[in-house]
Length: 319
Image (tube, rainbow, N blue to C red; front, side, top):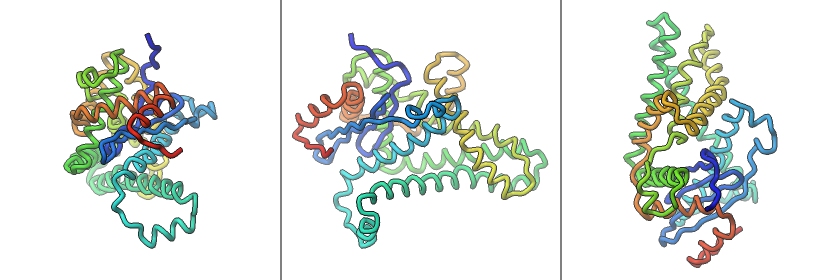
């Protein structure tokens, strides 16, 4: 019987018509291309924590993990979308950008995309709720109550955002692949063989999901931001930004515990995050499950497996 990775080792993300899966020392991305063939790539990966032991300390590791997930997720999302961007015409701005940065153009674009995503997320889910709470706070003397109201506003904005984007056809399919990713991890961690029939039987919800993490971030931020009592509004906003890593670190530790524990209290606290996953995951088609299985097995069996899958379909993958 093959030796299985410990529970909590595998993690993934849905991408455009595919699934990214990350293991202890590598990550893979499998994409069903427009011609219906499944292309899979495997990348060796050494985390910041593997090179610097302090980055594996509790709470610090949460911030490191979040940043690394953001980088890998953006990179694989860009890779998957490249199969469906063939009709895009290169503009003068694109050519100028490549002329300036040359071989570093792709890395610069990736960095800019991540930076822009973070700025938009912070503005929408942190600063906007804080600004609305500041207005409401003019009529409320308790800063604790204002912090709770801010948290509720933040949750509402997040839920409205998810509901709105879930109406887009492309996002609906991403959410179906998200469901396939969860089902495949659940199947593997339960000890079942990775077949489409077995995977389909498992839940599309998972306690270590990024959706649950974001939901916990929203809740933890309420309690952390309660301690902000500065008189100046600009300082209160600045302190929120400074405390984001603290919120992320605490939230990660809870998600990590939830993913490894069956404690009734932990399970109860995990329920709201699982409920939100009803919005961000959908039941996948069998073809999507096949893609998720290949992505998991690429991480488990390495380069020989990846080469065999691509060669069997006549796919040549650039190194």
